[in-house]
Length: 420
Image 1 (tube, rainbow, N blue to C red):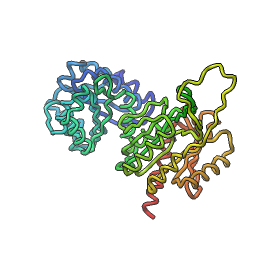
Image 2 (image 1 turned 90 degrees about the vertical axis):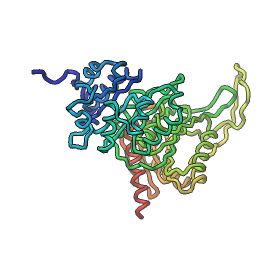
Image 3 (image 1 turned 180 degrees about the vertical axis):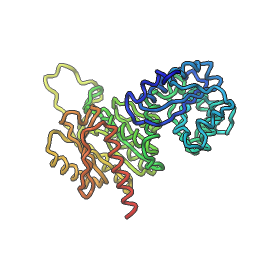
């Protein structure tokens, strides 16, 4: 008798966040299907059991044997008397926890939107819709096809029906399938995070700003943008609609946010004010490392090399959070305060004073002078302070875990304010 498929030995090797989760990976006829074994294996490494359903055209791109090897489970290539679509996605206790259509062609997206069930993939998705199973679609096609008005209308129609979309990445004239890491992270978020921010609009700033001292030289700081990116990703996972105003950070911004790239403090401030005045946001989270000072006078040419000395006079720059409060008196604002090698008590007190001065709803404080905290690190330790000077301490953790705690406090604070 055959035992457990050896390909399943990797299940849970990275984490157990998806333990017990059954994910159906639906593959359609896009060349991006070559990434499907990686998608399946990464989901398995986080604990999931993965089952594959392939359309007829998908089988012309990769062979079903490859997906059977990758997942350790038989692959559905046609619907038979076993009623595979019902077994996987019917409304019963053993139904799948999530349907992932990756890659999804323009043809498949439109068929799903119109309720056409003529492939194993579209029939499984249709069944899942009726069973209330979360559906995630990852588009992949040429950019011109993705821009087609009917395709855009069908995407919006499915979004309004509660279907999640990841990507695409617009590159080289193509609407490419999202990176495997992005797909896996979003699936983990959808399956494990509460949807307590669904319907909320969130504005996030991240990364450093620059202030030029001549045509090519500038003042900046080492901010990578990782903390703000983690908050944006967590807000997305909880169902929020996110706009990210991003300085020149090194962390990759997530897909499915409205992305506004900026460079200088003035550009970031202007972008924040414009967004808050043009769109009704519920929450503004200002994680960006915005410079406090900039050159009083900028020379619009390269300063000659070889000078014995160069004196630069700095001026104070406007505060983004203060401008945000003036732009929208009602938006819930979370500020950040970075200090360097001071006591916990002094850190909290300075942050509390900034909260009161700027009219913030919360402020997140950290000491970037300590190892593993703040700039460029993957971890952080923070203190979340509210207007009553209550403090929530988040010990040294990954920035994604810190983001989880910050948004827990934000959601709780908003809920409490509504019930008063």
